[in-house]
Length: 65
Image (cartoon, rainbow, N blue to C red; front, top):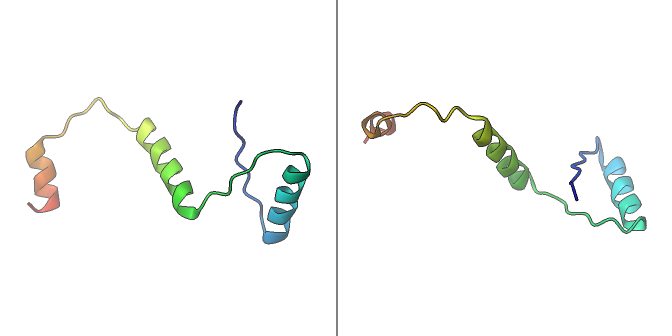
């Protein structure tokens, strides 16, 4: 089954949605801010251009090593 992500506008809407899903016996999971960032970072990584290669020397130079 697919997943729906819902971001309510305020605490009142948040509680309403949670209560509604609970009454409908729909499983819910509340994501922390860190978990949301991880998902977005993963999506960005999927979209990046992987056709270009960067040398190890170039990376180490940027890191100041």
